Amino acid sequence: MLLIHNIGLLQTPIGSTSQRGTAQGENRKYRNASVLIDGETIVGITQDGVLPPCPPDTTRLDAGGAFVTPGWVDSHTHLVFGGWRQHEIPLKLKGASYLEILQSGGGILDTVRQTRALSEDALFARASAFLDEQLRFGVTTTEIKSGYGLDLENELKQPRVIRRLNETHAMDVVATCMAAHAVPPEYAGRTDAYMDVVCGEILPRVAEEKLAQYCDVFCETGVFSVAQSRRVLETARSLGFGLKIHADEIDAIGGALLAGELGAISAEHLIATDVSGISALSAGNVTACLLPQTSLYLNKNFARAREMISRGVAVAVASDFNPGSCPSLNLQLSANLAYLRYRMTPEEILTALTLNAACAIGLGEKLGTIEPGKQADLTLWNADGMELLCYRMGSNQVKAVVKRGKVVVS
Ligand code: NIG
Ligand code: FE
Image (cartoon, rainbow, N blue to C red; front, side, top):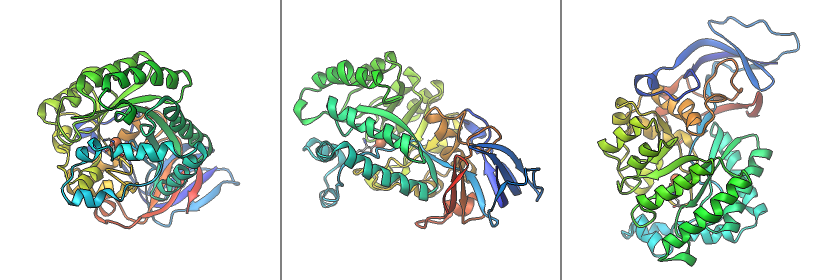
């Protein structure tokens, strides 16, 4: 057994389902606490300096008065890719928009070229180092999307890397097939023909090999229309995938409405989503996965998180780590921006980064809170509470990370 004692403050949401409305801001707080772990599972929590009864051979970890939360969950990344795209910055500074760069064959398509050029082993090595970095930032579970392959061979290569990461790395990893991320150069001007490949070849094969649990689509002006997105998602549903959608990242063309209508597990970005979209998400019980670093990096508005919460939409906050719109996998920066720009409370932010994020990737039963029976994933912080964590900016405030009952960062 492992006993983590001398915890100054332990703060956690409660439950296994996503928390909406006022419930999003309800956290349980234990002062002068300890957590008892048996193998990979939390078995007890005590407070007020009381220690739980434990066997004599129990290993003790003195938290030194640290603030402790559930391990954070990054519920939206594009983490398996080749190369970087620093050459885009001068173009952007001259006024080129994200979609203009994509339409001229750059952007996502640039990363597709760089990703196709790498072997499975090379992609694995890069991605594995990114997972190490996430752990050091206090993240213990991550979602990863494909979508830099855009042909059958490469859209199998990316999820095979993701599966290998899940098998070999301390981090829990959930895979999403995003073959509908852009139209590859071979199909330029023939989007529907590429849709046939996605729906007729790639998704069935990914499902057959059980390489991904979720399917996502970039529903955006000049990329995939609402009708095309609907086709991808309905096909995915018939093949057994859970549904996600990049909706209203740049233009509100109806992605949030589609997410609500299809009852997607989550809708991502929602930067341009208006009240009708927010109502659709609420009616469809869709978690809003908000990505504030992308708003910052693309110099866009910030999603209307307060309105989402007040209209009963469960909000998760993630990074969107990718080489174009968010080359950062520091989830603490998302917490800062959620505080300052979404005006979420520190309690709402903690729920967004843990339980709601876990629910957005189907892991709410197992992860996202510190409660007996949940997997022992905990982050110890050099802070006295969420207020300080959300206020400090730029420093990594992690003190230690426990994953499945083992200290993996200290
Ligand atoms: O979520 N919008 C689509 N996908 C990513 C960006 C991918 C890229 O630019 O490489 C996003 O912002
Ligand atoms: Fe994304």
